[in-house]
Every structure is written in C-alpha cells, then in structure tokens.
Image (cartoon, rainbow, N blue to C red; front, side, top):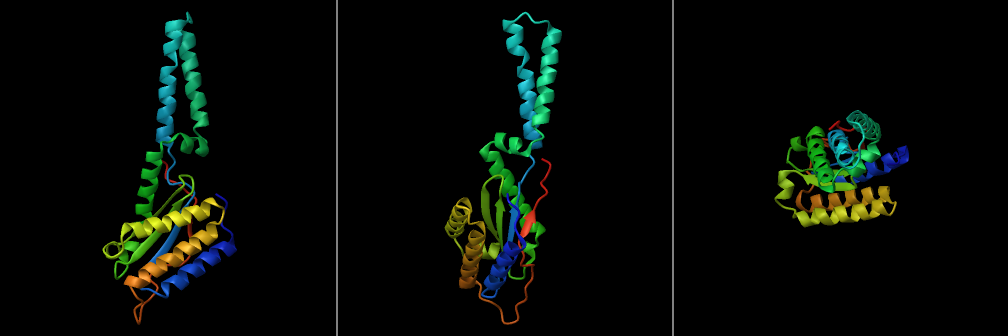
Length: 210
C-alpha cells in the first residue's frame, strides 16, 4: 500500500469534518496495511510440508535415513526463511481466514478508537485492510437499529470499486460523505453538539503477530 501523502490526509480529514457537521454521529476512518501477521498459519504449513518430505524418499528410494532427515531439516529451514515474507504469508492464507482476521481487527479498532463511547451510540467505523483487500463498516447499536445492512454493503461496494480503479482518496471521500448523509437522515446534529472523536485518517502500519 502506497503511503498516504499529507495532502491526502488533509482531504480525507476535511471530508470527515464536513460530514459530521450534518449529524450527531461520529465517523472514524482506519486503514491497515495488514490485519494479521499470519505467522502461525505459515509456520504450520511449513511444518506440514517438512513432515511430508520423508514419505516419497522412504518408499521410492534407497536413501539412508540420515540423508532423508537432513533433507527434511533443510526443507523446514528454507520454509521458515520464506515465511519471513509478509507477502508469502498473506498469499498462502485462506480467504476465509483473512476475512475473519480483518473483521476481528475491525472490531478491535471500533473499541480502540472509542466509537462505543459516544453519547448517542452513533459511532461509525470505516475500516479498510489493504493486504486482505477487505473493507467493512461497523456501526454502533443505535445506528444498526435504523439503517439496514444493505445500505452499508452498497457503500463498501462503491468504495472498493474506487480503490480498485486507483481512486482511493476519492473513494474515501465519497464513502465519508455517504456516511454523513446516512447519519444525517436519522441522527441530525444537536444544537450544542461537540466533536467527540478526532477527524483525521488513522493509518495502522504495525500488525498483530498472529
């Protein structure tokens, strides 16, 4: 994922600020380079591959068992080295696992960014994880009671289409503006409403080890 420039941060922050002026809701945008390290899964795959090495050599060759054992160690060592590559770990992880890890981190960010603490329970998280090609909207209870899931699914579909076509900043701006329209319809701004959460784009470079 190409780093966001200062100007891109400013454009997205301005979009959040403008959207929140029309509603009592709070919008937070989080972009993660990767939602998980997938280290355990990669090591499991490497171990299984190493364990499978002796079978053909024992049954179809007359190699001394010591040679087979050394080959097995070599395969495991090479696999461990290859598994240091994040691109490799993400590539071999099953799609279902990547979606589950990305969803879990989205939930963690909803709590970490204090979206569950807003006065009217009207916080919305727009979460995108680059490595998993995953995007999701998580809204607090008061919003889920009034806004059907299909509305958020349509928003995500438009966002991912724009990101896929290389227009990520325009995609985020459009998604934030749409969030503002949805929230304004059900949660108009309060007379003395305060901005409870920061309006800047949050980029997560570090990833969980698992």
